[in-house]
Picture: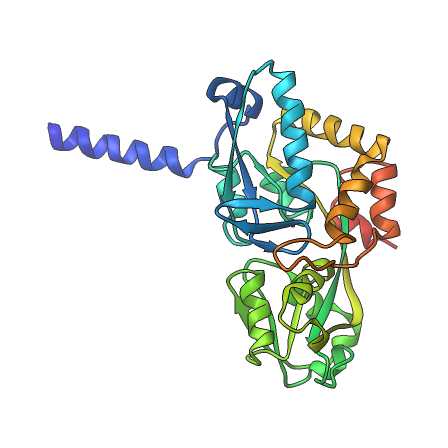
Amino acid sequence: MKKTLTLGLTIVTALALSQPVLADTLAKIKSSGAVTMGVRESSGGLSFVLGDSKFAGFHVELCDRVLSDIRKQLDLTRMETRYQPVTSQNRIPLMQNGTIDIECGSTTNNAARQKDVSFANTTYVEEVRIAVKANSGINSIADLKNRSVATTTGTTSVQHIRKHERSAGVDFKEVYGKDHADSFLLLESGRADAFVMDGQILAGNIAKSKNPADFKIVGEVLSVEPIAIMLRKDDPAFKKAVDDSLGAMMKSGEIAKIYDKYFIQPIPPANKPIGLPASEATKAAWASPNDKPMEDYTKK
């Protein structure tokens, strides 16, 4: 009888852990007095680690300010923010199972992901590009033939090369890094001839490298992607709270100041600037807040 009961409880527990958490993030935060923010360790100026479990970046600061507004909305005298590093592979499962409550990294809002998670209004519009060593002789997709191309596991960047009209007949080997820093290391160490990723992530990793002049970003724009703060699916109250806070920053112009802090001014740990002004597409997203997926950007 005890064995049967124990087995039954084990099965129930396993099923519970495998199921998505019912979305009521505001209630969860209010009852616990805490919120868990998913962050990235090497996502350029959007999210990066400072050391000692401290994180910074454009999206991290935006989320800190959003959560401050939510604390006031919930009438909490204090609210603990916990930072949980995530990867391209585990960020969506960790959102679904309740490990993280808000993800403030470099996640593209696309139609496939919208089936599993939700997104706040777009705060950054990215262009996927190619980074290479400056003396590599690589200047375009065509030059990648018979080369090794690095990207990060769980991202869609290499798929953009495969789909690009200029990639016909270009055969290359794919190598994968576990995170963006690892992918850049593949390029830096010579184990890959190119690294395909969001332009600002490439620029951020180059800026932090020992010899930034040894690298360059080349070639065609492979994809234009809206990057947004990721939320749990079917939680309209929390999404509204996040969008309202972001909207106020967009309207006041504060979001542009925060952007410049991480993309124009020198940033740690190398204290070098990424040097990437906000694109016209990013400014347009701030001027007309929306949560359109990537596919809407490619419609002709």
